[in-house]
Length: 320
Image 1: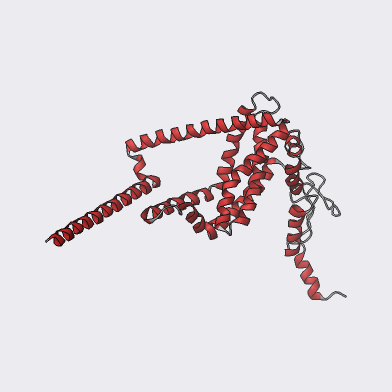
Image 2: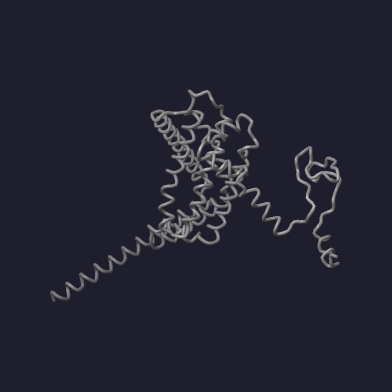
């Protein structure tokens, strides 16, 4: 006979059994465990730490899980994942935006760790070449810059992908295999995957400032190498065409970057003429740095002048 206390506890753990699906509200038979309309599983028990952990294992660590299949396939045969998605495959591998969401989640965790525990180390690494007042001004600028980047990381990630897709479409203008939207999917998968990898590796190196700096220097090369590998598999490029397309990609990227700097410079010029630039944080930092450098120069000139005057007086005294 089951004790009354245990019976009461088991009742508390049970959910109210409904005759409709909680996901799509379609009718369900009392003995029906899965919805025939949406495939949703009928839940009988309230959430506990055990079934919460089991759900995590099932979704992320199960070898049959779509995330792990997608993750490993993007290393071994990225064309199966990307081309398969374009042909309508949705069950075998994780959809493009779902994989992008996973990459954003990991990037968010990385940004949280940096912001709360390693921000000072990153600022120090970026301003170690400066000294005195200039170092303090650079630290203030680096702090504002890094904080802005960390807070808008998801926006930056998403803004990069359309640009890469557009450049890729131009670079592969003589390949009619994929349209612009499909190029977008290529980078949605490819960039998400390499961002996921480099972010996780970045968390391993973040504990040592020197290692983190070195890793930051090689990260762009890792990204370029992987994306080159993906494009080679998708477009079946030989070594010569791969080098040619990579060079063209860099050339177009340089032109785009140059255009961005020109537009920024022209915008800054007109903002300066109208006085709108005076209220920006960047201008205030530059102005503060210029004033600090001017004060330091005046101090050096004063010290040099006093030293020269003192030296002349000593010479006169020695002659007399």
